[in-house]
Image 1: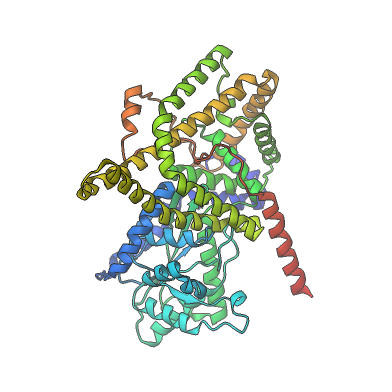
Image 2: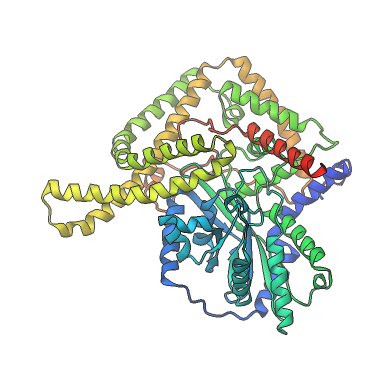
Amino acid sequence: MSDPSGYECLSPRSKEYADKTQKCLELHMSDRKVAAQKTFLKMQTTEEKIPTGYRIIRLLFHACVDVFYHYTEVVGAENIPPTGNAAILCPNHGNSLTDAVVCVSQTPRMVRLTAKDTLFKVPLFGYIVRNVGTVPLQRKDEHQEGVDNKQAVTQLNQELLNGSLVCLFPEGRSRFHWKVDGIQRGVSSIAYTCLVQAKEQGNMDYTISLCPSAFNYLHREKFRSGLVVEYGPPLILTPKDDIMQLERADAIAKISEQIQELMSLTAFSAEDWNTLRIAHTARNIFAPLGTRMTIVEFVRLTKYWGNALSVNDKSDPTLREDLTAYQERLETIGLKDNRVSRPRGSSLYIMWCMLLRVFQICVMLVPALVGALLWAPAFYATKHQEKVVMKRTKKPTHVDEVAQYKMMYGLMILPVTMMVTCLVTVLVQGWPWWDLLWLVPCVSMFMWFSIRIIEDGIAALRSLKSLKTLLLIDNKELEEARKMREDLVPRVAKRAALCGDLKPPAIRAEKRGFWFEFISKFDPKRRRKKDWNEVLRLHEVLPVDYAAIQRERSASLGESQHTKKE
């Protein structure tokens, strides 16, 4: 630690969290990664025969993810063992079937998945899950007469003994939670069984890698949000390890503990929803809007503050409460941190900025309206299905099912809309049918360009609303919020100093011209949003009561513990 005096004044539990955040920041340079890379060099790489059906499905999934999520970055792919070597991906599971889509599309190797057997009976899903090599599993809540997964476990063991890559979700089932939930012991049991079988076969050089993975969604159910897929350094096990000398139950328990620790370091993890909320506030203060920061750094800083704020420390016991009060003040006055951090400016200057935003919206209005007509069927269908899912489940915890239906309906409707547009154009204009060869790509490019125009237009509309609030707000309220922020800035910096490697990213210094920004709109690699709290919607109100989720979760845990005691 770079600040020993500050570190020593922490309570024992806070020291544990400070050490945990340090481990989180050093994850990609850890001894575990170095050891894994040395082990990978000794492994033999074999050619992987990927079925044609799997390649087509993966290409389709990749297109779905790239369209639905604006930003998709993959980190740590080198931590996955070479082809032909057994490995189990252990990702967090918070977005239902969308997690499987992301796993297949973003993992460089062919992945074997598991899914509940009832999905195999659904016409569209059944075809897809069969073609990606999915193994059916039975669930207790769907098979009241009894569950028999012996055949599925045997199939998974055989795949791993043959050197395949299998994805298993240690949490068991999808949960919309603020952290990695208590994991089941199925992954550890399967890994241990494979090691025992390899030992019985005399294959003492057999290795199985348990790869902690994280699907870090910025807004898991929102269109055009962000996603960071992170593969952490694996836990590599062999029949020669000391853990194989333990009893089966003890060995499985120890492996499960190590998986839990590695997953917690890779994925978002906070004490509760409010901690995750103020972690965003602390990150905004630490690295304000305008900072040169990639989405990977954004996720990295948010994970740090989620861990750092999970407990209070003796050096600043009121930091959590003050961050919460500041965030509530921002929500009350209707402004974001970046508006409070900068000088307000004169009323004339604010009105000039509002005029520029109105001009920007008007310029984008024509192409945005034409593009919106093409996107309207998909927008309406997905939004309607979101309401149906939320109404059917009547539980905020089931918001993890929204993204999969949005993605599925978009996949079905967008190609139909595009083809109908092209056919109508050809018929109305009286063009020959072979003109579809160039018309289809042109319509596709226009739809891609129009969604960017719509994004820019909504961002300008959101900025116009913020400027209006800034123009009408009472100076006293703004000054109170600014004083609260000025008080928090040094305290947040001091808390960050407890982790020596944590430094704020560089502030963007260069200012690009109008024409450069205009031409960059046509860049296929362009990433417009600088504030990843934004998604493609007109307001910032989520249809989910996070406090209700936490209360429901706490109540269910209390009931289960009470039942066990009885």
